[in-house]
Image (cartoon, rainbow, N blue to C red; front, side):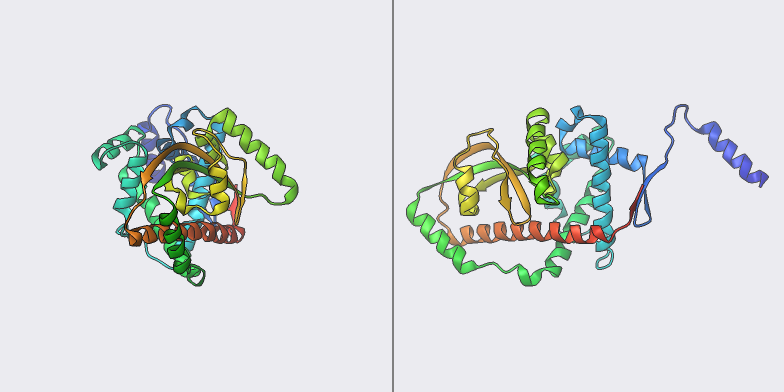
Length: 306
């Protein structure tokens, strides 16, 4: 017992003055989350969306907390089916997409960028692995509902190529949100639209969007007009650059879109390539939809205590 006291006193002597105390903030399925975890997650979120630097500390702390909860719940569910080994294929491609979105030209500069936020590449790799394995899990759970009507897409391409020489591409951002009941609809919409005006679209996406794109402020990149449903395209065509849509009803809630830029390009003559792009776009939509459904389901069965 005296030896334990000596060890504790030694540790206290060498503890830096003003060192922050680490304490438990909450538990997710008996897995603890500390204030240090939340600070680390805050740095990660700010690294992916610099505009969060100017966000109220209480808001960003809550964002970090919700982000960790989501990650822990997903990881817990994934571990029932897969092993984590950090060697999952596609990680390098996704990392590349990350740093391109941030305007960084190579991996070495991305690592230097992360260093500025006291983050290591392995942290990002671990987070990406969770998302890859999560999508793999969603694919296996909903494989019977992942079917794509290829013939319909082929007909769509034939018609589009026949009628057009040029195609519009839109650089978009999104906010996807859900409501608990119809009475909440108007209030929720008003809050989000107000935050878009007051805090900017990127920060509003971080705060309110349930889509995976939220970590990059809702950024979707460039999307061709032939990849949209008629309903979405009808809305987009009436928007100007930097304009935001009214909330649009979609299968798993509501979507708000912002046009960041518009460009025209010649229609791809390779119809097979066009078909593969449309198949990928439709598949991504289904994954996003089923991901939200499944996450909501397992979250209900998770124990979250503060």
